[in-house]
Amino acid sequence: MKTKILLGIVGIATIGIIFIVVRAEKGPTKILSKNISGEIVGDQVWSGTIHVTGDITVKEGVTLTILPGTIINIALTDDQHKGSAEPFHDPNFPNDPPFYEKEKITIRIAGTLNAIGTSDKRIVFTSVSENPTTYDWTGIDIFHGRLEYAIVEYAIGNVQLQQYSDVVVANSIIRHSLGCCIGVGHSKSISPQILNNEIYNCGHEGIDNAGGSALIKGNYFRLGDRSIQPEPARGGLGMVVYKNTYPTIEDNTFEDLTTAIFFHDNSKYPEEQEKKVTLRNNTMKNNVIDINIDPGYPTDVIVTNN
Image 1 (tube, helix red, strand yellow):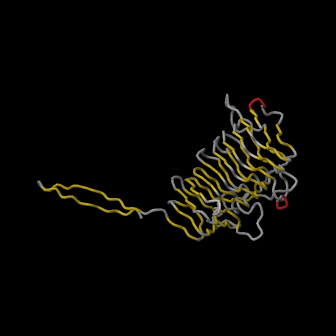
Image 2: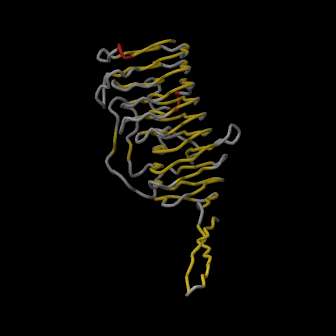
Image 3: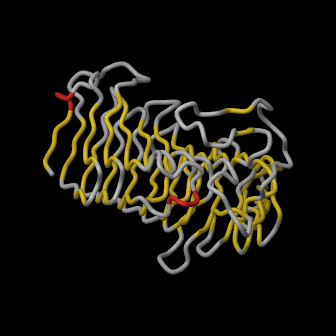
């Protein structure tokens, strides 16, 4: 608990009286091995085994700290029942199950995430199911902060970076997702850092980069076990880069993928003059296609040195 000492002086005639007020300030709330759901309006520290039973929203200005070794088990149903009741279905993947927002849990960090594990005490976000699928929950949406030495698995879109650039995802394992393992820049053109992660068994693609100038460095993309996907023969891409998106993609390894990097001629944002996509020092191993470029994608913005 923190304390604040307030000093004040009261004058009585020519005699000064000094008084001291001691006021206690409450620190972050410590959450150890509890069930949790709903809005988080004050700073919290998670540890032990946390059971998420419904949508979590960390309010703007609030910090969620997750200690090394914490296990976050996400339930298969959402006790908050928020969002649309209408099913969403991706027409490009007809065998994917429909997504019902009211039924699936989302962890939304509108404040700041401070989730830094260690190599031997990773922070784990996983399904509570003993027989998990790649669509047991929705995923974690990070506005600000750092996710490091973590495992995120069994969500429709495991990690979403859509709002601000001051996010780092590093040294983590991001795997077993129905859609993209990491989505970047679909809501705003942002430039986070995605560093030294292992990214695999992503139903559609490892990273879906729709906008901004992200740094994507030192990651290992691979196919993984497709048998748990509803449509094993489809997807399995390393990265999708939309037109008018300008990441730096360097020192990554792409192995055994259907396509390592796909440059998509769809665009969510206007062209930015003088901006380039940089491909530098990447390693391609046993991919069906290393680089695939849509006919409408401007190849002159791609600078390669691999």
